[in-house]
Length: 150
Image 1 (cartoon, rainbow, N blue to C red):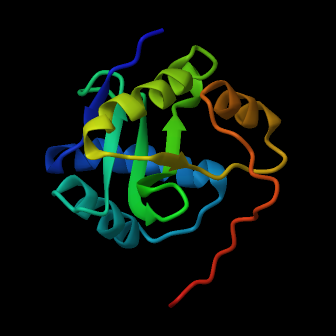
Image 2: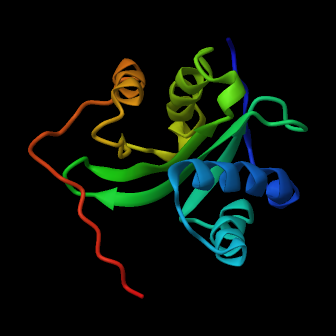
C-alpha cells in the first residue's frame, strides 16, 4: 500500500484532533481536550519545534504522525523525535505504518535531520518489529527518562 503524507496546517485541526483523541484513548493517555488542542495547534501554524503529517487522503485521513525537533551533539546536529504515530485500527497491518516511517526521512530531508528517535512499549513486540523493519535500532544501553516540569 502506498500512503501519501500531507503536511498538516491550521485547516486540518478538526480531523487531526479526532485522530489524536482516538490514539490517546487507545494508549490510555488522559488529557483535557483544550490541552490537546493547545499542544497540536502551534505545530500546524509554523512552529519551529515540530510538524504534524496526515496519512492517507487529506479529506479522510487514516492516521497521523507528530515529529518534534531537537539538537544532538552525538548525532551531529538536528534530530527528530517521532512523538506520536497513529494509524486507524481498521487499516492496520496493510503497510501504512511502514509507508509513513519510510516517507518521513524523505519528507524532512531538506531540513537536515541527522537522526530520528522514537519510543515504544517494551511489551509491544509487533510494533518493535515494524520499527526495526523501518531501520530503527534499539539502544539497549540507554533508557528514556522523563521529568515533568509542571
